[in-house]
Image (tube, rainbow, N blue to C red; front, side, top):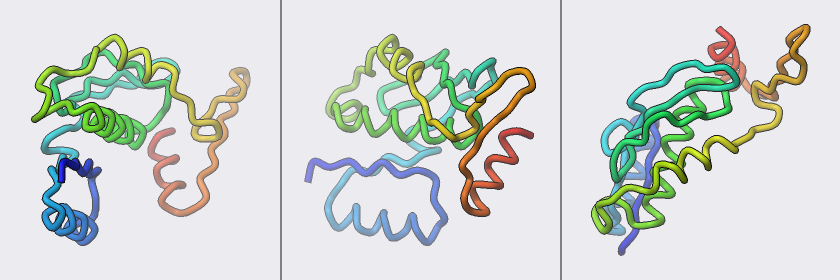
Length: 142
């Protein structure tokens, strides 16, 4: 039905439910780690530097001003969703403008998520409110 399902990494049971529904609706499926994903990730001052593989190609040197591997995964999913919205991939083989993608990600903010509110002494605020969120926060600050 001219729809694309953009699927982030999921537990097998959850992925099976989504994939079954996508087949029923004759939707195209784009899966993180298969059709799109993170090529490389480096910690950088104020965030991280990413290379993402989207539905239309690779986007290099993307600065994401958020901390944590989970935010890189969120960025990959967001990129694939925007590409799918604009028909990038099967319907439109050329990727989005790399400059536009870089500029968009550079402006991202997530207040209260590993947010540095003071530099000396360093004070970081995170609104983790469940065990999974606390685990991700702990991993991000290492």
